[in-house]
Image (tube, rainbow, N blue to C red; front, side):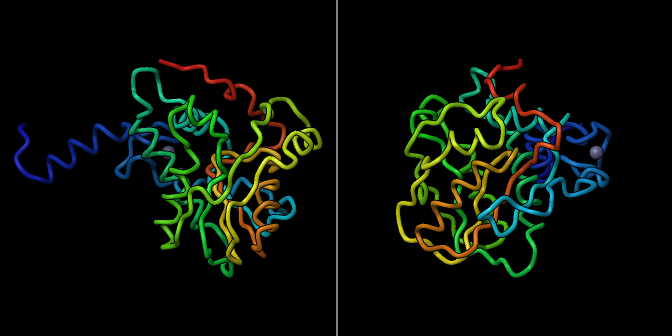
Length: 237
Ligand SMILES: [Zn+2]
């Protein structure tokens, strides 16, 4: 059957961008990239008590299985793709928009801010995934985003295999706010493990004047889970 209408064109384009079936469980779905069972994901994966000084934090899925693979593709698009993996972008941006809708009432954002990469890493990677996420979150809730509000002033060693306390020490003073901050900030990142990175970035926002900082993440590493396997940019074909 040929492509006959604008609708068909759009569907054909969508077919290129979106994966076949549900991105969570692989089953056929009428609502790609997720089936009804997988979006919203069965249970919010984040423990209710956020690490200080966060006022709240949310994530959409646990950092395991298919979700982990999608996030990995989003962060490390295959060589030759020029940092583009539209299917992974579609899945991960849909997840972070869903996470944004989980933020409890009473935390309306004055500004949405990404946890930035150090500029050296940004140069190596060619893009900053947290900036893409922050823009999607801001659009979803009709708030302003400021993509360079925070600067990562130290290129901290990878957090792989470090305990909570070691992560904290590793990150101390890693972020600085580049201007004075609004009262309620949503701080966006891809994966939270212990929350040490969010915590340290939130401290910089508080020093710059914000009173409440809410962490908004795509995924959370479940207790006992590990972020090790995907920390190194091993590209899958
Ligand atoms: Zn599913």
